[in-house]
Image (cartoon, rainbow, N blue to C red; front, side, top):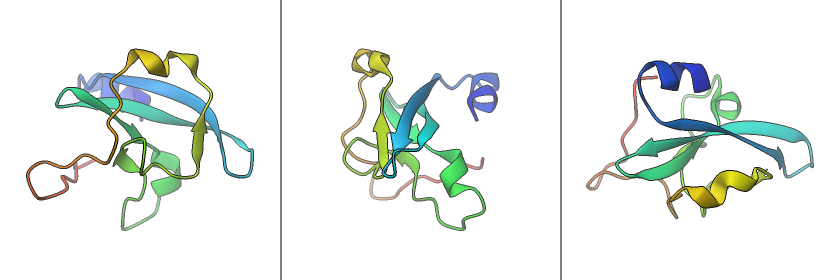
Length: 91
């Protein structure tokens, strides 16, 4: 996901952390419309609904980041919403 987003000029960072079971895990932080959102492509893989796509601090459950650089980014409080609809990107 990191490499794909970089290829299409989406500002992204890799976030290290762990899940609720204490298992090491990683996901992405991406910039959309001036704020940053979390994406976990591995946990959404094979799903028809995206539970971990463009989420903010309050709705990105089951993930605890350990990356110290996150304070440098304006991470949204809740999921990305444009107008009244949630935008689903084609990737």
